[in-house]
Image (cartoon, rainbow, N blue to C red; front, side, top):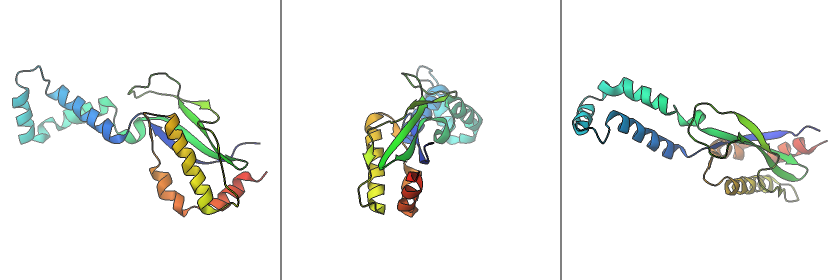
Length: 172
């Protein structure tokens, strides 16, 4: 019997704020190297006329890795119900050390990222959603140092009829 997934949650190498700080530091260091004697003068010229280095900044941002949203994903947690339990398969980069790169392949890594969480009976909207959140928090503990982006789930979850999803996903 095939598993019926109900949500994919992206896992990132690092949070967006940290990524953009690192990218900006890379661009600044490349444009205005600390060991270059005229760096301060070049930086002042850049502040006076930002369009002068706009093309180079754009090039360096792309060279660094582009935008965070899709280029820093290192895996997905695929949530599903198995009987009265919530589980999440994990597809991710199969490397011990994950670094910034523009080429990566996601592979099936495990059928269960964190211990399953049971859906409390009687089955209710709040009970199911609470169990899903508990499972996601357990996944955060398993993937320490990684950023699990639940923003889309947070936005959609209150509007989903979880009792119907649960009933549909658990029927034989």
